[in-house]
Image 1 (tube, rainbow, N blue to C red):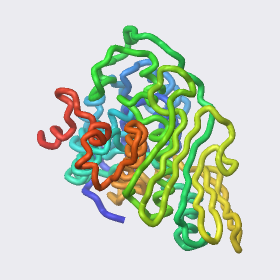
Image 2 (image 1 turned 60 degrees about the vertical axis):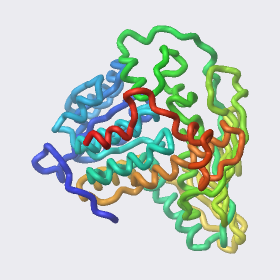
Image 3 (image 1 turned 120 degrees about the vertical axis):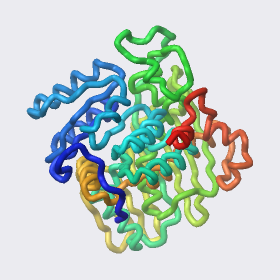
Image 4 (image 1 turned 120 degrees about the horizontal axis):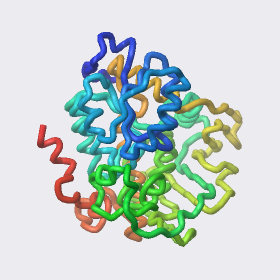
Amino acid sequence: MVALGSAVSATENPAERVRLGLIGLRNQGQTLLDSLLGIPNVEIAAFCDVDPQQFGPALKSLSESSRPVPKCEADFHRVLDDRAVDAVVIATPDHWHAWMTVLACQAGKDVYLESPATHTVGEGAILLAAAESSRRVVQVGLQERSGAHVQSAVEAVRSGAVGSVRSTRAWVVHRRKSIGRKSLTTPPAEVDYRQWLGPAADRAFHPNRFHFNWRWFWDYGGGELAHWGVHWLDVARWGLDVETPRRVSAIGHASGFNDDQETPDTLSVQYDFGGSTIVWEHRLSSGHGVENRSSGVAFYGDQGTLILDRGGWKIYDAATPLTANGGDLLRPHLENFIDCIRTRQTPAADLATGIASSALCHYGNAAYRLGRELRISELGQDPAAKIVLDPPARAGWKLADLLRAT
């Protein structure tokens, strides 16, 4: 494990207590809160959300666990300025991830960053520079990295339990509901919509581009590939011990629901790493998964096949048909983050890991949107791909300027 810089803490003894600010309280934010409440010596010092209606459920969770009432802020800058906050948990829409993380690092806060770590490929280098220069701990929300059964599956693959693996498949198949079609309107009176938009394109408020459904629009998310795909692609990449593909191709469509969403509801992406391949697949209007599982990873070796999902793993068609049951992923991952705040060690899913796996999602989406293969080594000479992978920032919101300002 790599040691990082000293912790910046307002507590007299940070080894005894870590004070967190939670930014983004809906869906995954609430899930993270519920897990954090079970970890000893962790205090929730601040809540932050642009929608004040989200404070109610979060405060209810705290009251049920007899915890002190934290500050409630609409502006995340106030959380970053609070010297009583040691670290922040960022569970916002994807388009805010890099911007908030850079500012948090510069404010001396360690960061738990929900996946994907980035919204564009170009954000990765800027994020790494900010974290390294500030010597902050950044844990990306790829909780499979802390799961004992996922770790044992990866170890089995790497140790040759299924022989030589050159082909891997990752997928999610389930039935999502249509989001329908809605019209532009005024934002809810209590919501700071300008703050919600942040670095994204300046648009009038559209209710389908807001809570949860934002992920189906390119301005804010990367569809199912960035939502679920980043997790299983990370595990596939981990098992194969690969990082950057040579070529990426994709085919799919966004016509299954006939509604407002932009991202594809059906998608297949092939990643060529030279000596091995990863294939991603998602189908959002089907109940019949791959390998009899709704989501997971399959490692196809020449001496057997290992199938892994969150419920466990099993080896098929091998001399020794090994198996393991699943276990909790999120709490061990959060515990690892808290431990690393105290010890200054590198976390299980460090920023470089999160950036590499997030890039796979961006490459796959770009190949789909462009309708052609991407050769990763040639992206510098591919203007159309560069625009899709790194769309120009709107005025006043260039992420790299944050580094130059310090």
